[in-house]
Length: 134
View 1 (cartoon, rainbow, N blue to C red):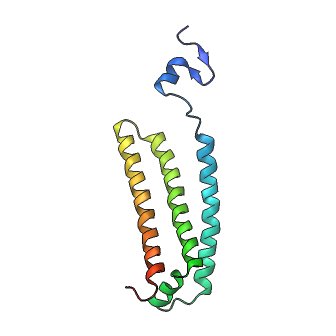
View 2 (spheres, rainbow, N blue to C red):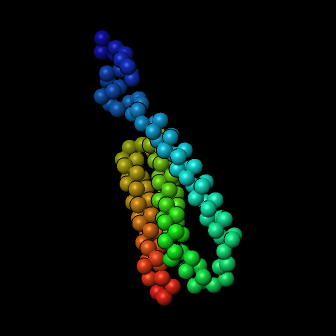
View 3 (cartoon, one colour):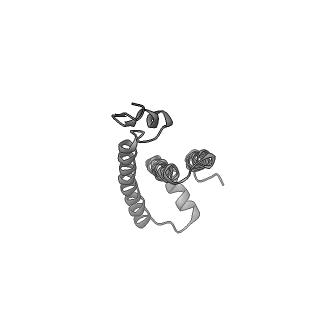
């Protein structure tokens, strides 16, 4: 009975890694929660941009330097990049095969974590230097 079925496929399929990894529901739920976070945070950003006067660079810089503005901006950055990573990870896992898959996932992680870190660093630099730094 080498092809006997078990819960989750055949024994051979399980050893080869074929079939469900049992992570689909978690990815789906996380992707939906980050989408909801994006809606809320982008709504806040749009309302803030419409209600404030950004007639100069210094006005925008002073707005970002406020802690109650910097925190939601950082949360927005992290949420957008995490949402992006989850979505592209699923695409790569479904459609890229062979050694290119590992390289694509590594490049995706490098881009996502690097981009988020760069954005967070830029916001924190403005927060800690205020409007005097250039």
